[in-house]
Image (cartoon, rainbow, N blue to C red):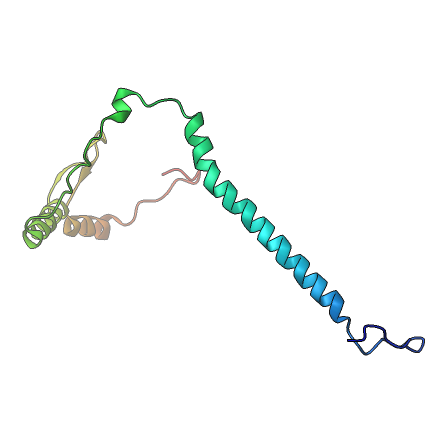
Length: 130
């Protein structure tokens, strides 16, 4: 191959591309890729070893293996679902005290709608707090 090209006229770009320059650039990129891959592989290999050496020894409690807890499986899913629904319906359709709130009670939905119809929606304070 002839890498020497005739000089181009002033203000005109040369027509040919330097093949040697492209090959050197590709080879340089390949060498850098292989070098960085090798460094990463070495770090990935030696990092766990160095990390383990710097750790203090395990205590006896840490050395004991405890099995994980057993899963809480549903034995009778339809019955448990129906039980949850009936408990929710009983709460929505019954009277009772709200747990953790002093002096707050809950009433059935139908009765609450009837009271709202009779008394109207309570007015809010102008300050923003109810």
